[in-house]
Amino acid sequence: QVQLVESGGGLVQAGDSLRLSCVASGHPSNIRSMGWFRRVPGKDREFVATMYWSSSNTYYSDSAKGRFTISGDNAKNTVYLQMNSLKPEDTAVYYCAARTQTMGSYNYWGQGTQVTVSS
Image 1: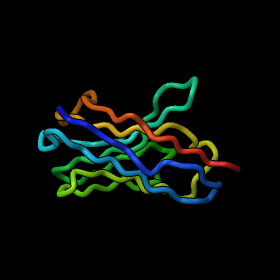
Image 2: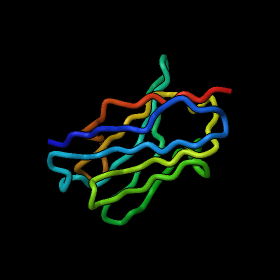
Image 3: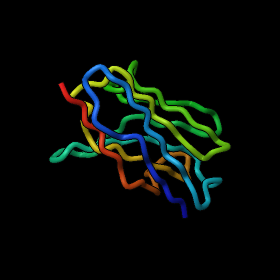
Image 4: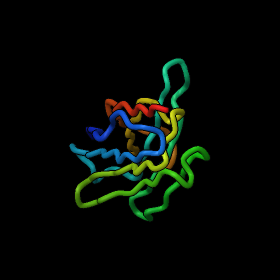
């Protein structure tokens, strides 16, 4: 089992930055990749970014490219999401996720952290 705990959300103004953190505990050595998703009430969950531990390869959604950066600290079992130039449309609950296989569905999810961007 893997437990994920996010932190770093909050209320900011458009153009500001935030850094989200997600710490994995339990059996983090089984993790192959970790990612960030977000959900706006009434909409489907949306992929934001993912990072593979072994290669450090990263992938982003079109809305995140150029503004968000995913990074990780393997020694701390932590993944980060640096969000710059935030827009009101980035307002959502952000979820950290991890998977123990290279591809496919994410096995584990955090509880989410709220990010609110005011105009």
